[in-house]
Image 1 (cartoon, one colour):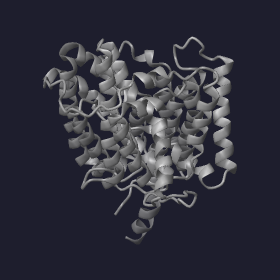
Image 2 (cartoon, one colour; image 1 turned 135 degrees about the vertical axis):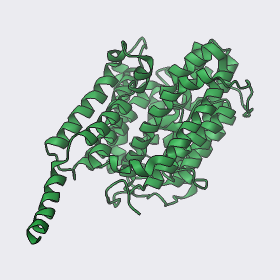
Image 3 (cartoon, one colour; image 1 turned 180 degrees about the horizontal axis):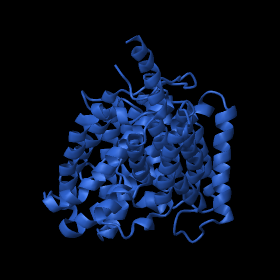
Image 4 (cartoon, one colour; image 1 turned 180 degrees about the vertical axis):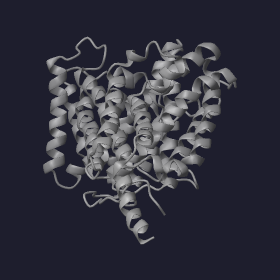
Length: 452
């Protein structure tokens, strides 16, 4: 079977894709993935619920539903169910790309309209997943390496904002916040580099726990969030009803197309980090999981699900690529969705603590992209693809207002630096001729011509 990525070595990985660490260690390592992704998973329902001025109990229920849906989809993506799921250590959840469309649809049709659009839109990815094989040739290493780098580079500013205290916080950039972030980062680096056994593989979660410990005496932990959270919140399918409107579906189309592109890039990044060659079937099953997961999410009162790039950096950092570990993360997410008090413990994590871990995790994603590009001949053509794609992707990411005058569809599609840079890389790879291939072809054909 032909593969999308070039062959790679995974000798540095302690627990490979199909390895199963001991259960106790698997649970601990699974929590690492959850703590890295938790903020992203709960952010969308919090933002949408707040913007729609929903009651507090409804917002809390939406957060629990988001965690539960993310758990289901994460388990399917990691473990695989029939033709669904890439069988890769990939955490799933609702992406920020869907915030804009959700607010538009929610204002017109309420929560039933959002969940109806989520269900209808899921069939876009289910349909697109059938066409990955013919698209395989458009993802050579120069494109995949660029995309993986973009994932890390566009996430690094987020980690910096976390380290400073979070955008809009009164103490943004304070010495206290920066010192906490630096302390967490230092602990993770030292444990990862010099620790033995579990101290190294669980360096991230140990670093985060250390962050909690130093924030407690500083009064930075809001325990009221835990106190106010309910003990149990069983998922109630279609609690708010469902409304199918074509206009709502149209609003979600672009967001689904964007996340399809980003999922392809994320799967490449996971494959590169885990040292696994990905076949076109792997990518197809991964996108199909996006679609099926979003279909399920709509019925359990959650937004569309897609792959989370925040977790990619954990693989090379901890040397744990086990899909079994991430499948356990999925189970834990489902449990957190049913028991909100436990989820609240993760939710009160101060931004600087997560920022310290985020800097190194997202930096590792960039390193994985560089690793892919090291075997690529950086001739004029490939350097142009790399330069323009990174320029556009990073530019859109740090200066999103550049798209303010664009039509809504264009603005939505290119609002993500990852999707913008990926589209540019794909187009340049098609338009710019590959001189190296032309030279090879001419050398191969010339002796044949002489022989004739």
